[in-house]
Length: 177
Image (tube, rainbow, N blue to C red; front, side, top):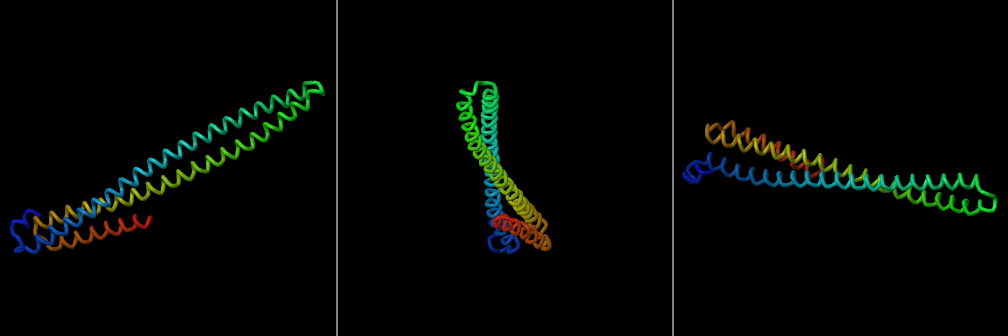
């Protein structure tokens, strides 16, 4: 870029390499930003999955506690006099209903956890795609510098080829592929 600035429009090879490098650096910065954003999202979503999994575990523990109380009420019903059995029967029915509600809540939380995990995995896949695109553009910028220093026209074609791969990878990331 400095070389092109010093020689003005006299060196079209250097000028085209300088402009191409600036464009590649700009696109690479955008790709890098998207890669960082998707990586952060993947971590956030994985954290949400862990929170939901913990909440589900708490519900399952609560379910177990209700089961234990139900079992004690069933045992008590078997041991007490007939006149006290209806009270324990009502208690058993109450625990059964509470357990069904708790089970539904636990299963819902587990489903939410699974959904967050899937979203995290998808974001991590996109992060890798953005990282590949950024890497290809960085390599093309390095090739551009070598092309400028060696003044090899064939390296300029290499710059275009590797940059093209980077742009295709970036497009795939944008399309969530």
